[in-house]
Amino acid sequence: GTVTDNLSNTYAYVNAGTDAGTATIRCFYGRVTNAGTLTTVNVPATASTNDTSAIASVITGPFLTSPLDANPANTSDGTSPHTCPATGTLAQASEVVMAACALASNIAMTATSPSVLTQAVARANISAAVSRRVVSATTSVVPEFGNGATANASQTTASFKLDPTQALIPSLFTESDT
Image 1 (cartoon, helix red, strand yellow):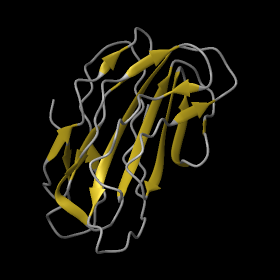
Image 2: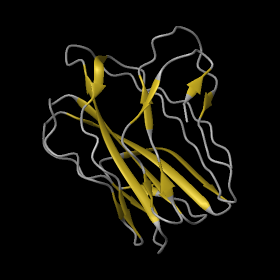
Image 3: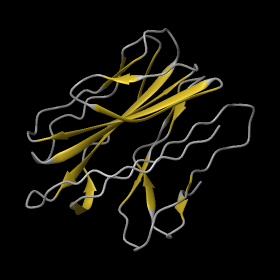
């Protein structure tokens, strides 16, 4: 399906996504090019008896025109900490590494430092979390999420190239639903 917003920006999926059986994750990104106030992001979900949790993270900043760098295949596991896929060597030293985790349980999650938990939702039978980390080296990054529980999870990582001549100003928009 197609991701849309109230400003008619264009979105693309980070990678093919993963269906881990009970916790599935599919992340997307967009470079906002239409002016206005972002108030709604619509994420497609197939009609089923599965629970859905969606999180939209917006970071205002000086990203390059083609910002996506690392977008490794998702990982799945059943034990905390839930280790996200490694970025591999980054294309440049100035990037934002985003990570996300979908967990088949109603449990609050944390991000392992130095990543910062930007959003987390725990609903019914599914939880989701997003973390962010601004890096200044090309060294591979491996984000993790903790929850102290054993539950099926899917994790993803993506990095986005900043314009190294500009400063980053974080700004977050969160919307989630079950």
